[in-house]
Amino acid sequence: MVKIGGAEVRGIVHYFRDLPDPRSSINRRHVLVDVVVLAVLAVIAGADGPVGIAQWAELNHDWLKRHLKLPHGIPSHDTFGRVLECLKPAAFQQCFSAWLASLLESGEDDAVRPQVAIDGKSLRRSHDRGRGLGALHLVSAWATEGGITLGQLATEEKSNEITAIPQLLEQINIQGAVVTIDAAGCQKKIANKIVEGGGDYVLALKGNQETLNAAVDEFVGEHAEDDFARVKVSRWEEEESGHGRKEQRAYYQMNVPENLAGRAAWKNLKTIGVALRIAEVNGKEQREVRYFISSLKRNVKAFARAVRNHWRIENTLHWSLDMTFREDESRIRGRQVAENIAWLRRIALTLLKQHPGKQSLVMKRRMAGWSRQFLMQVLTGKTT
Image (cartoon, rainbow, N blue to C red; front, side, top):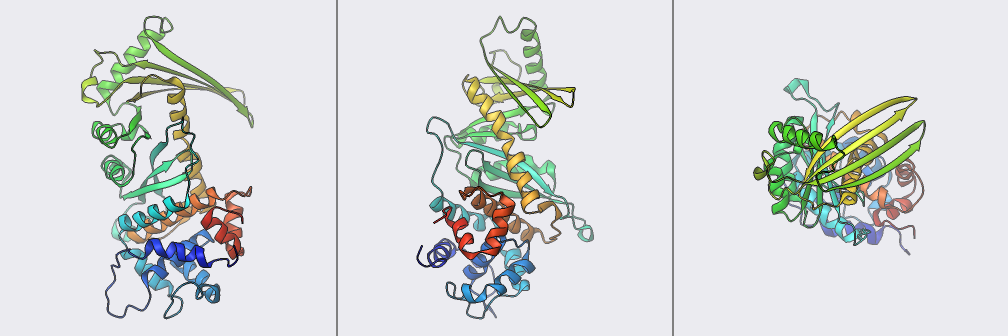
């Protein structure tokens, strides 16, 4: 790149130029797209809120004014806070989705269907006792193979995931994807929504679906006694070891019996899955059995991959947000600004993960703060 920064920054500007401006036209001193682009760059480079965004922008003022309009200089932290508080998260996310689509090429193997894992995470210190508000809870959609943030929706309580997930599914493209959700999202309406969107589902099953769970438990228990000799079953086993831990996993997948109680209420329900995990940690054995229902045809390797990859949203997205961005320590109280900052973190994490460098995510973020050239590399996913 001959002129580091110019084309890359202008590329972001292009995707945010049509973002609806919710501010009053009276005394509007700063261009909306400037404010948004500054926030994107600053969060990648280490900022964690409006104050940090403003400070980073001030330190890089001379460089930024060559690529942005900045008619009245760098906005204050109050301006950043007000803009992030009034921006509608859905419109904000839509612009990012278009931008990411222009940057990221699919690295998926054509033989492997894309997988979208949906799960919730609470921002533990975002509670506002003065207004009687608990911690903000975010439901996120995550492309497991590429490590790409697809969308998020905020709720006030974890229990509201049931109503948030269908809304989130409407915001993202799941055509041809396998959608995986834990037991909280094992709901008939959610299964229907996934099928209507052109996807397939793998849903963890627990006691919240009492009738179906009891029927599956009885069916699996009955046939496990003779090692599934009376039904067609597909099996897959795998083993991992390291760091003082040895883990064995066995997967079983069967067609749903015609007479299974509650079957008719679930759209395109085709298979039952069982995941058995036996782990030895410091000489002690831990055993866990989980049931799943799915619209997938019987293909135990695909089922095993879906179950295993679902945990990437916990181990890759949520863990990285806490370790790299210290999200659980965020004390931002305003609901909409907290949601928009959370979305900026997820976009920053996506871009950091796409960068081909061998450094850790924490180190990449530090380097983006130290070097504008490296920051531009993160924006494009390229090292040259």
